[in-house]
Length: 400
Image: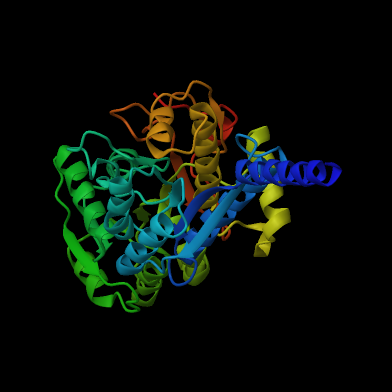
């Protein structure tokens, strides 16, 4: 009888431990971005911001008593690779949600698999205007975003060039990707609203190293400024091309002019470029100060400069938004997480902003036009372009 009792006790203990093991399984969140190649300064910064947030949350006890486990994949900024990764994260890794997407084309090609699987996607860097409306005709939309979309940025760029700085003759140089061409269309629309047509519209490809032909057309057309939509390496070639031609006009473009591989590759020729930014690496609030200190201490970037501060901050915030939704839903079930995101009860203090009711069932954009400010490349880093914005930087701009 004693032996039988002992066996039953051991069995009960094993079952109990087994139950605890199941209860303690980590919550898997996918992280997809380009960690190599020309977009990597954005992708790595985003990934490291995600890692920082996950580490903080896990050290504080996790979510629902479980640790968060990120499943990272390098999509190489390639649409076909993004598609492969999406299917792997869904079918093999069984993620509860995913964050990332740096490149608009990769997002548009990949996120349909998460939509079909009813798994939320938090786009934290890609800005193509159509990203969150890709499935607007479906009853439920699982695509969210906490970056400033191009419908916000393009009018800001035009306002800066035309209204604030008085340029009436502007040229557009945009890359041939989905990102560049959708952004070009947004710029043309914003210019048209002011009754202005660009004097030149030129295209270039990823990895192009000579922009002479495009720049000569802009120069001959009398362009007073160059409006850009591209990523760092090619944007640097625009600045370098102007230096070679001995022709210098202002570059005003999308947020990617803040990328390290623009600033470093363009050198002195890149100084003065301006772009919308949701976050500038300055400790203007206690939350931002803590984030910057911890990021620099953990990842030790050269020159104490985050390669892509916007990507890092938005990556960090995206995890806190998902964690808040999972906690509120008391579940890792996709539809319940989506429902919680659309009706978050508790504000989430982030680096970019404090997210108070950031989403609704019909609005999956956390950032509104009043949040970004203009940054400027100065002294090999991005600073506030306008003194008034810097003076008010401690006042957190919240969604309208």
